[in-house]
Image (cartoon, rainbow, N blue to C red; front, side):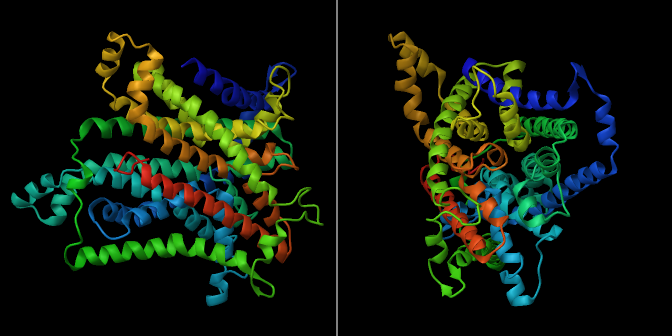
Length: 536
């Protein structure tokens, strides 16, 4: 556990503490009165209210649209099910900047909605809510659907034999069993929307700001570090509480239910009702997922003189407007290189952490497990700016090092590695290791001969998720990526921030490239994933 603990201490705890200390310490004394001043500011209270409101609305809308999908993927078999499951997961690993680009092309000025119906929804709260549902639909489908697929249907059938109607049996038997899973999925969605940044920046416009956006504005635009530090502490506290509740709900879900293999519960649609439900869910997938992605691709090919590769060809030359000092296409190579390095770091740190959590128990270990999840909800803006402030002195003067970007990306990848590896490692029978030791195998050889063959496929899945999320990391990278080595999400954000059809078209082209890379990774994961329940 030493290596993961040192990694998190140096590259997560230290930068966050550094930026908070820089904002709230003056002349060696803590300026705690700033907390009351900031939290009493009406503008800050408005930001906090909007952050909570949009997160709650996004969560409710996501659950309403995704729960029918969870049932369909859990209990119904239909052609192309594996492909559709992968398609609905693509938005979850897409960079939020790409999501914003897709909805800008769909709902914004000159977008498909305006062309067909004369309506614009960009810079509105509806664009934000729909984009959040687009991202988090798969969270509910895979988390709730993964459990639903393993619930024994004979329990509900027994209730119906005893006289309960279909609805009453579902309400009294299935719903209580699903409630912890629905709550866990809702908490995850609330967490991700509570800390939303890229979507708000691109489609929300200046009228709307979450805590994450306000931290960025106070840090990058106003250089008001005391206010940014208070908001960081506020967001950190909220995220810690949410993760604590989520951990409790997961333990409750795992300890209360008796599950069966998912293959025993699925069947072809029966009757008009199930066929209608399947058609409606597939229609939602088409409208919510495929249409925004399709419009994004279409806009990348639509030039001023018709459809063609003009915007893609333009990526090969530097802009005269000063948007880049290098050709935008170089961002593709930069992103893949950074993501590969970040994936390697995440696999080492996350794999060691998962192994330590498997072989040890106790309150301290559970606390370390919860800490590993904090980077998913902590302000990425704070982490990125904290890197610049904290890692500026020997022996960790990394401000001019290219390693700064993959280290920040690895922080986001480690939780995915741990969550993927941990269940598989816990399933390895400890007696196999003991038998290998009795036969004279060293701990390293025992791991190589016993553990590794069983976790090899899970390791590939973990690597795929870490690569996808590293490829799309934006919040921290926007601070630390150098002008001559931009990543794909940073390049998209810069292009969208410039006026002109060429800049917009190049942003759509880069977004399409990034989307295809993430989609290809997800399709590969669907073929090799080990947990057929589909839970995250």
